[in-house]
Length: 292
Image 1 (cartoon, rainbow, N blue to C red):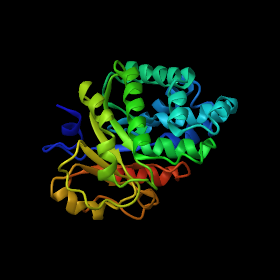
Image 2 (cartoon, rainbow, N blue to C red):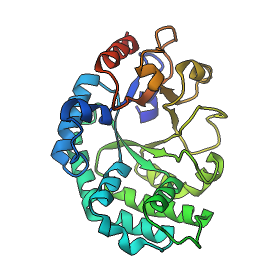
Image 3 (cartoon, rainbow, N blue to C red):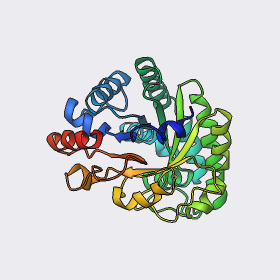
């Protein structure tokens, strides 16, 4: 069974995919600041969260590890100031410490769970990564981010993903910018190097987008699934009935107890992030409804 078939089973209950790290960090570690630099701390907090919440998928984002490293070691970015976006990106992905921490975390999760639940790595899209770098480093203002830069970023990301070939991954999620330079169809054609490496390692690939799901056909691109954590489950129901591989519905409104899946057929994927400041009683009550 491939990952897409696991996410969207035809004969079992709906899968539940939770992004719970901020919530678990607050609940079990009072917001420890060494989460992204200490693999033991990360695995401890993550495993406690999973033990309580029982997500059907384990996922972690590479951007958090790199953002934390640059915050702790601001001098690293000084040589990038005034340079082209792709220069800064190449240097970012070559940093040893955040990659080592990330690999150690994945190794620990692989040993702990042995593929059950499956592990997914979330990466920023090439254009999101360049936009993020532009926000943390004063890049060359005479060299705005171009299509060629985005395509080059996809090549660098694809090469970077080779580092995780033995990390037991089931899928890659491309996290798109909430203010993208290009619309999805334009961007996907430039992301081809990432799709090629994903196919090489036989990983599934999906995309996470902000906002509400719309205009999704499920045809004509390289994506296996779509994630819309901000969407209401009732808005996704027509898409699920069409058989589209979309996850969502677990938005802030859900965790505040204002919506649930109880009256919906058991189709589609329940996906979303538990807010870091969510009330534990409401979280557990909503999870109980979700699994009932």
